[in-house]
View (spheres, rainbow, N blue to C red):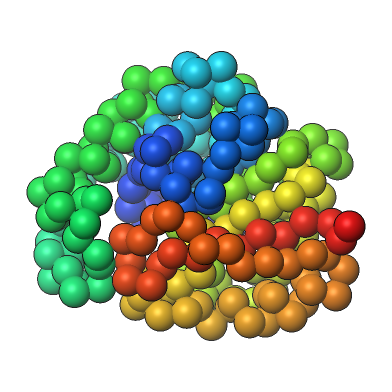
Length: 225
């Protein structure tokens, strides 16, 4: 499938949100981390500045900084309008209102753009579920933010193949959220749980983060002890 920038709505989250969404401890942040579908998140840039080790995988990184910046500016007003029309799906607490949300997101994406370079080995163009050019267990921890589960229309086979590949290169993976875009439990959640429970330790953990209503759980998959 040809990946086209015109079909992308870039939307980035920051390090503080990643910490909360995935329940990341100080010890976790010292691990070798892979981010899947990070897009224009500032997680990589911020943690790298703090001495962390992150590699982000996303087809968005096929494009240069100015192309991504332009696409952000083309779509941000559409996202804002959609969010204002669906405010009841969100918990307005740590993020006070739509204006505050837009500022947080734009700050994160600006931080990403300042850090991004197409030749940067921390940003790898890659489209799931294709094989990643990394050795088995290259990373300690893999994170999928607002990609898997959120889009059940991608289908169960896509989810399973993507997670299998993530588990090939990562000792442990975490997926957040477990909801779809309508803020209800993803149709992929139970089938994925059932499939991977056969060979892996699969656990749902509560986290100290909730922006989508009831979106305060992360799925953790790791080898059985």
